[in-house]
Each structure stands twice: as C-alpha cells, then as structure tokens.
Image (cartoon, rainbow, N blue to C red; front, side, top):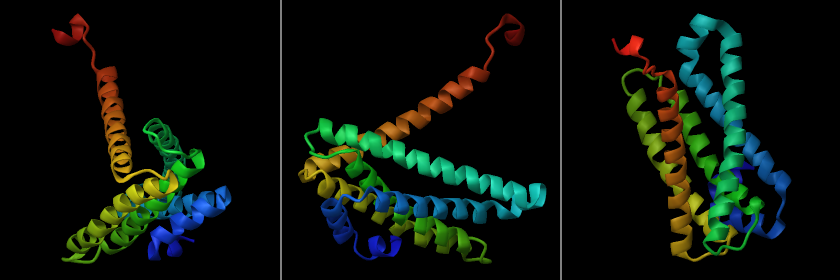
Length: 192
C-alpha cells in the first residue's frame, strides 16, 4: 500500500476520496508507524542494545510505534477541525488520510536514512540527502492531501497546513516549558 502512495500520491488521494475506505487508511497508518519504529530502533541500536539488550530495543520500538500511531490519529483530528473551520468539506477520515498518506514519505525517508547513517565517512551526508526530499515530499503531499480530501482551494489548504504545523510546534513547546517549570523549585531554601 505504501508503494502506491510513494509512486503517485495524487492518484492515491483521489482513490481514497472515492472509496472512503478507513481500513486502508488504518493499514497505511500501521505501516508508517512500523517504519517509524524500525527507524528509531536502527538509529539507537548501538547505544541502547549495549546497555539494555534486545528487550530495551524492542520496548523502545513498541513505544515509538504506539506514539506514532496515536499521534498521527490525533493530528488527523486536528487537521479535520482546522480544515472544516476554514470552509473545507470533509470528515475525520479525510484528515486522517491526508496525515497518514503524507507520513509515508517521512517514515520511508527516516527508515532509509537510519539504515545508511552508520556508513563510514559519508553516512551522515547521505542521510541528509535522503531526508531532504523525503520531508519536502511529505509536506507537499500533506498540502495536496488536504486540498484533495477537503476539496478546498490552494490558500485554504496552505493555511490548514500552516495552522496545523504551528499548533503542533506550539504544543510541543508548551509541554516542554511546563515540564521544565514543574521541576523548578522557587522555595526560599532552593534560592538561598
């Protein structure tokens, strides 16, 4: 399923809009989440395996899989809220499909980059060369997916991508700030 999306995202979005098959979208979401989990395992296997063994790597991969799966489902919901508020006509399925199909490019790029990162001398450069078009294609297909799935104009799709991306960045930033502030003590004992 992911291969079809990588080959022709435009026809994949058109097919998804026509068939409205949530099972296919969830299967693609599972495949992308597996690629994210395997990518994380490949990137950390040297350090994590030496300290925790196979169980540590497997636990981390399971965590990344669940985090990816649930996060993409949540982002699909946010996309639906933003797109419909801006005048798009669609449902949660449309937001989830736009997010899921575009994440295929990111997960595939991360998988390839994490497999190549350990190549001596040129691994880091090769990984960057792989990630550059993967992330560009991911964002472009996210934009195109919103435009196709919600039948919006160019500006509305652009604003939806921008608002969704800005919201994600702000939420991550606020969570990090809240975490830092929750560990800071302002008692007189800590100040003196």
